[in-house]
Image 1 (cartoon, rainbow, N blue to C red):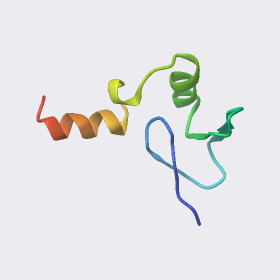
Image 2 (cartoon, rainbow, N blue to C red):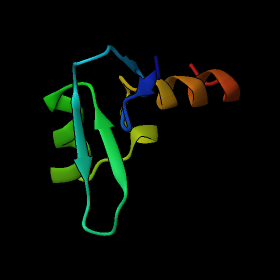
Image 3 (tube, rainbow, N blue to C red):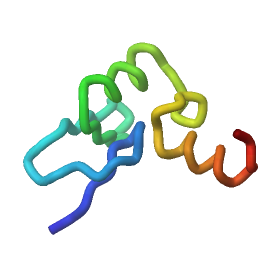
Length: 66
């Protein structure tokens, strides 16, 4: 079984859940929820600047900023 991670928040997606989005240029994005899909595609937000994502938490831990 292949473990897939959400392209926005980096949470693991369970089998047969979530959504796969393929852009015209061939890039594939996986989303665990509509929240992640909307933030990335429609609102064009960056995961490193969105507080509830795993990438933001990793950056926050690494730099020591509270």
